[in-house]
Image 1 (cartoon, rainbow, N blue to C red):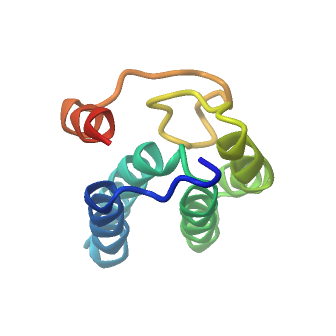
Image 2: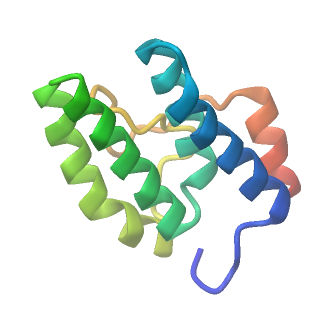
Length: 116
C-alpha cells in the first residue's frame, strides 16, 4: 500500500518465509515458502515484486518455462496492483493460478494480516 509501511510483524514473517525459501532443502519447500511470502506481501508494492522476482529465479533454475513466463507477467503487474489495492487476497502467486483468482488464506497468515 502506498504510503503505508509494512507492519513490523508482517515484515518479520515475510522475511522469515523468504529466508526459509532460500535455505530449504528441496524445491517443493521453496515454493511453499515463496507462496506464503507472496500472500503476506501482496498489499505492498516492493515486497510483492521482490517475491515474484524470487519466484522467477526459482522457475529459471528449475528450467520451468511456463512458470518463468508467468512470473514475468506477474513482475510487471505486481507493483501497480499492490499500489492500487487490486490484488486477489490469498492468491499464491504461481503461474498455474489465475492473476485475479482469490484463494483461501492459511489461518496464521490471515490472522497476521488482519492484525496489521
